[in-house]
Amino acid sequence: MLASSTDSNTVTAKPGVGVELNSASLRYLDSAKATLSGLDLTFVAAKWTVLLGRSGCGKTTVLRYLAGLLDDRVEWQGSLVTSDNKPLHDRIAYMAQQDLLLPWLSVLDNVCLSHRFSSDAEQAIEQVRTKAEKLLNDVGLADYADAKPDQLSGGMRQRVALARTLMQDKPVVLMDEPFSALDAVTRHKLQTLACQLLQGKTIVLITHDPQEAVRLADNLYVLQGTPASARALPVPSTSTPRVLDGECAILQQAILNQLEQDYE
Image 1 (cartoon, helix red, strand yellow):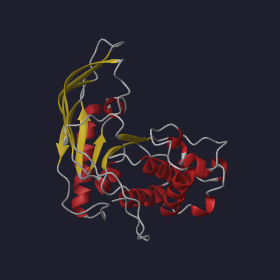
Image 2 (tube, rainbow, N blue to C red):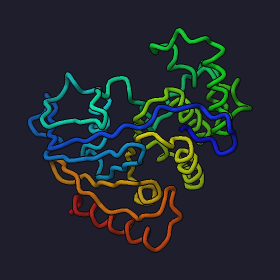
Image 3 (tube, rainbow, N blue to C red):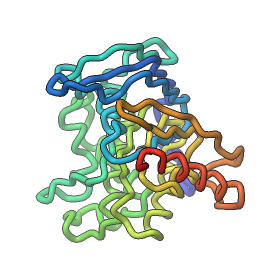
């Protein structure tokens, strides 16, 4: 279910789907060297999987491959398996670091944008806009539906981007450092909001921030080496978003220790 902490008339969401990459190797066709090799990743259905690693190690490549954006650009070996044995095509939403809002559209029209190009375009406009208004209320921006993006703060723009992602109602959501450009307090609030509203989805989050990883991860991997492979680190048993305690501090230090190995 798509969770709204205050509204009982929640939007029914498509449940998450599990994904596994096994013994995956990937090389860009214009490169002599592989980017990923021997990569084993499990993205558990309806849970948050967090990927960390140095810049350029291949984290975004993983997301782009899952989204089907690299098919003609890479050589791939390995297996990709879903928990329901159905392809991932058309079942993924992508939320990037940049909000990518169209400046000439209102906030409401930006949230509705995906429906202009989807197979559900025959839906009544009133039904689509009602759903978008509900999601804007969920992210606390109901009063800004008619505003233009340049009237919003960075945090507000990312909340619009989150509503637009939810509007697509895909079972798998890929998030490429969506909160990294925000100040610490706004980032903390958006992490919490994302956890509430993305309940039931399968989330793959890229971050450079060990603290963010500790707060949000149900499963956590550090990508290391050239070509990169993945090492899993155990996470606390407490529910997300976590209150940072001593156990979280130990994990945060373990992440830093692991990351530092690629900088030696």
